[in-house]
Every structure is written in C-alpha cells, then in structure tokens.
Amino acid sequence: MPSVDSLLPKPAVHVDPSVMAECEGVVDIPHRFIPSDEAARLHAEDRRRFGACRRLNHAKGATIKALAR
Image 1: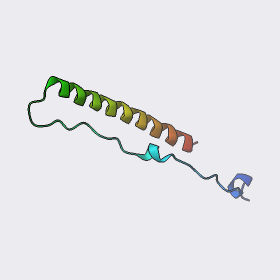
Image 2: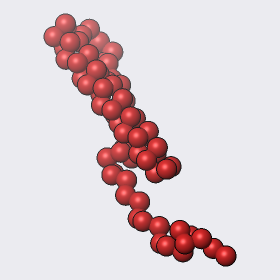
Image 3: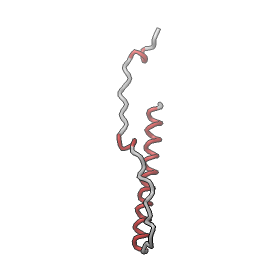
Image 4: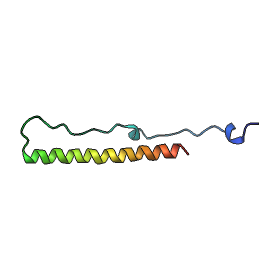
C-alpha cells in the first residue's frame, strides 16, 4: 500500500533564475602597454567578478542542498 506522502502532490520547486546564471569570467587584458590607472581599474573589475562568482557558487550550493532534503 502506498504511503500517504507518496499520494500528495509534490510542491513546485522554485529556483531563482539568478542562481542558474554563469559567472562572468575574468577581465580581458589588452595586448598593449597598460597605464597604471587602467591596470588598477581592470584589476578592480576582475576582483568584483571573482567575488560575484564566489557568491553565485555559494548560492547554487545552498539551493542544491535545500532541494535535496
């Protein structure tokens, strides 16, 4: 005999689309001399992307763990 839980409809699973996004990737460095102010800007952008990617991957892991319960 089936259990009561198997007869109930499963709740709809919602995963925020932002969690499914891909990371932006590293900043492209031009093949030319780069002045220090431009290098600093490119480095700052690269660090911003890295931090965003780490937070995104953490959110993906948390989502997977919540859905696996």
